[in-house]
Image 1 (cartoon, one colour):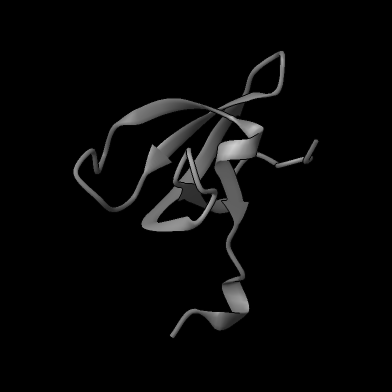
Image 2 (cartoon, one colour; image 1 turned 120 degrees about the horizontal axis):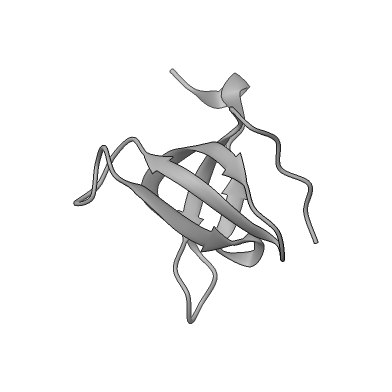
Length: 66
């Protein structure tokens, strides 16, 4: 189980294989039972807030951006 914090940037993982997709989001709320609300910053649902389980998220290294 991971401890993500509000405001942390994450990648969304592909469900069956667990590979990070090219979709980035920001954690906006920590819900009970290991769920997180994520504001999607890219992808088809950009600008929407979706609920994800912790194993679907992958931390984004801010050092490696640009």
